[in-house]
Each structure stands twice: as C-alpha cells, then as structure tokens.
Length: 533
Image (cartoon, rainbow, N blue to C red; front, side, top):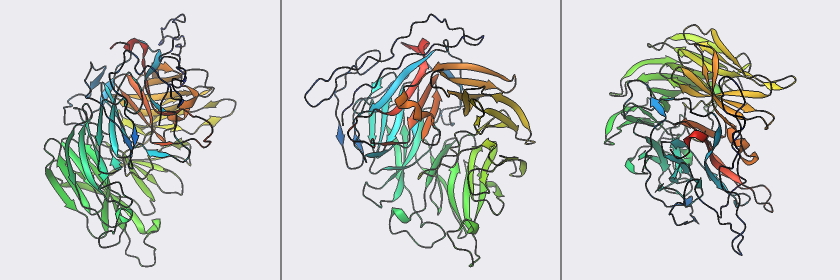
C-alpha cells in the first residue's frame, strides 16, 4: 500500500462579522506541499511528510493478517489551549473547556490518508482520541499514535501498540492524564472471544496494564458460548479512578493505576449487564428477558431495560430505574446528570428522559415524530454513551431539528430544560447551512456549522445558552474527498486543545479498481495562529 499527498487544501477566509475580525486581505496559502511527481517505476510518489519539518522516520509498511504493521517513536506534550473543568484531576474523565482561538481562520493541521486501497479491502478503525501532541486511532488490531501537525501515512506514527486480536470495544472517554481503555479479541482468527481489556497511555503508547475477563452466552441462553460469535457483546467505560467492563454475566471494575480488581458484580438469571456509561458518574444498563413462553426470546417484546446508578468506588447500586415496557432500545447520553435516550417506535430515538439524583423521572422530552433528531452510535461495538448529536450541560439537553428544505437547507439547535422538559434557547442555522451539536465546553455548546453549497466556509462555533449568542471559533473548508467525514453516524468528531478532528470509523477500498482514490482516514483543523506552537 503506497501513500501520496491528496490535493492541498487552502486556508479559508473568515467572513467579516463583529465576531470575526480577520482581514479580507489575509493571504491564502496551501497548508501542505503540493503533490510531487511520480518518483519510481512502481508509480509511488515521494513527498514531504510534515508541515514544519521532516520526520526522521524510515517508512515501513506491511499488511498483516489482522491489520497494518506500523512503527514509530514516543510523543511529547505542548502547552494546552483548553482548560480542565473545575476540580478535575488526572484520574477524572477529562472535560475540557475550549478557549476561543487568537484567529478564527482555520487551516489543515493534520492529515492521515491512503491512496491505494483495493476494491473490497476493508479496515475497521474503532476509536479516536486526541491529546496535546498525539492523535490516536484504532486500526483493526493495532492502536497508533500520530504526531499532530503532520501529513501522515502508515509508517509515520510516533508509537504503535499491537494487540493480540482485533479491537472489539472502546470508550470515547479519556482521563486527565491522557489514558483510555479498549477491548480486544484473544487472537485474530475468526470466532475469537472478545475477552481482553487494555488501559493505554495515549501520549507514549504504553500499555499501563491489561487483563482478560469472562464471557457469557448471547441473550438469555444458559451456559457458555462455543466461540466469540455466540458471545454477549462486552463494553468498557471510564469514571473517576475506575475502568468498568460489562460482559453480560456481570461487571468488573479495575483500578486505573494498578489494574487490580476494585469490585465485581454478577448478573441475575433474568437480567444481564449490557453496557456502561461513564464520565462524571456511572450508569450500568441491563437487558431483561420476559418469562412469558408465548414471546420469542429474540423478540423486542420479550426484552425490557433497567439502569442502575453505581458507586464507582464500591460497586454498590445507589438506585435502579426500570424503563417502561415497549421500549425497544435504551442509550445513555449522559451519566451525570442522568439522561436516557429511548426508542419506543420502529425507527430511532423517540424520547429523552432526565432522572433526578434518586433515579426518579424529572422530565420527558419527546422528539415529536422526528421534528428533533437524537442519534446514538450504532455499530458492533457496545458504546451506550456515545450519542454524538445529543449534548447535555448547563442544566439542559441540546438537540438539532430535522433538516428544513424549502428554498435553502436549514435547521436549528434547541435546548430543553432537564427539570421541566420545556424548551429554552433556540439557535437558527440560517439559510444554506446546518448546525450539528458536538459537545459541551463548560456552559457553552460546541457545534458544527456545515455549509450546504460547499463554497461558503464551514465553522466550529460555540453557542452560549445564557446570552443566546453564537461565537465563531474556526472557519474552514474541506477538500471534496473529505466532505463525508462530517457525517456523524460513520465518523468520530473530536474537539481538543483548539483543534477539530474528523476521523472515519471504517475504511473501504474504492468501488472502481481502475481509478486511484484518495481516502481520508483522519483530518484535523486548527487556527492559523497555532503555527509553530
């Protein structure tokens, strides 16, 4: 597999507005060197491999049976342009407050791309995490760390961490000292059990510790599975000082520093632990099966859901909430404050339910037959608290409306009060663009403003619900090959340290094998004032 530079992306001009003081005469210059001509008979291209200097790394590339073979060196940290939320420590799940950049003109600050995938070639790329200097990505059975500020290809990584088998679970959460957890299979053969957890330092790629854990048979069936295909799907999440794994037959909690077991619980016969939501608190989701023999075991009518709040230090259940019968799916956009997303219809989320500190209903927010859009990640990985367009903070939950398309496309983002369920502030996209929630940043909501005409710049903005105003953070444009990276259902979107990253969750070769196709795996945007930082 060879690599070369896709067409360079120009730094977009910032529109003139009171919040955007950029000069219209600011020069536009490519963030990356232009494409180099073919350099050998095999048709591979040579290129400069960094923005601000050459990486002294020899390129080594191979395709192993379970993923890409990579090598690199350690990374380092640089000054942080975001701040941690009040009272956070290194063992807390990181919740940073992003600062407005010195310049709202955005430019490409990182790229990871390929150009020669074959038709039918497929790579799972679960999980994406960013630190001050490192963009980390899962690629089949390997975790890689790439230095931010580079035009990166396989072989350019600062570190790599090969695992025994493919990644089969992950959490979007990162600790205050830049660590996270992933699950992986026992080996890379088909049907291998997903029964290993690793806690990883994202700055240097070091495995802090790893353990295997039990597995249970899928659904309400008794006994052990014969292989991983018949296994209940495990999940992993982080909360203060604790890594939590659910595996169907129970829950295991590990100490972050030592990897020792802090506590464990066992699921009863009628209900199984199927997913945990972390962050500032810990909620564990249970699926329960009806004893009614007239209902097929695999029917949604036979399944009900419970959620229990757990003390992360002891594993003691503080309260248990039982969802109404007829709920077909339940996700957890926020563990603290507790907000549940439930599906009581055939398609998508139909209601959000906020709970008080005793697990009692506070408010129910109905999405009004699709007037408002709530989305949670759906994949083979059990991540119950990854709801990319549902943001919770400042006593509210924020949703986007469905797209309006009268003369020009538009939508809006609206807040709902968690105590009453009533609407609060509304932020209109205006004609020709769409607003998508990303995450909370303190009491402000970070959102993407995506241009519909692909000519006007896109933007990362902060929406202030207290003042009802929009504050621009970054204006940027995207090359045509990377426009699909903004789709929230098939990509990760991360804002960290003043930078915005789009990363695919899976990479597929082109449909037409006769045409070379640039495939973007990760693209990072930063302020042009960040050069040299």
